[in-house]
Length: 102
Image (tube, rainbow, N blue to C red):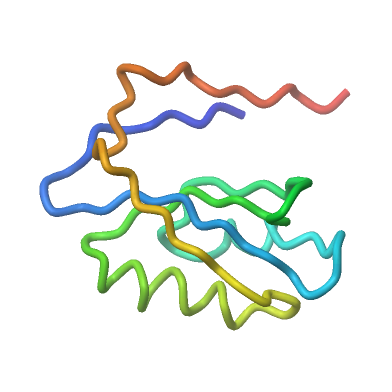
C-alpha cells in the first residue's frame, strides 16, 4: 500500500493528529481510517498511541469533521492536532510504502 502526499489545495488544511488512548495497546488506527478526512493512520509506540494524517477544507472543518469523531471513538483519551506549516509540501518527503503482508 502506498501513501502519497497530494499537492495542497487552496484553502485546505493538512495536519497530523496525535492520539492517546486510555489503555496502552488499544488498536484505533483501523477505525480511524473509516473517518472521512483521514488520509492514513497507524498505531505506534511512545507518548502517543496512534498517529493519523488528515486533510480538510479549513481548521474549523478539521475540528468538527475529523477531530470530534476521533474523540468520540471508544478508548480515545486525547487528540492533539499538529497542522503542517509548509502546507504538506511533498517535494521534500520520500514516498512511503508499506510492505505487503506475506
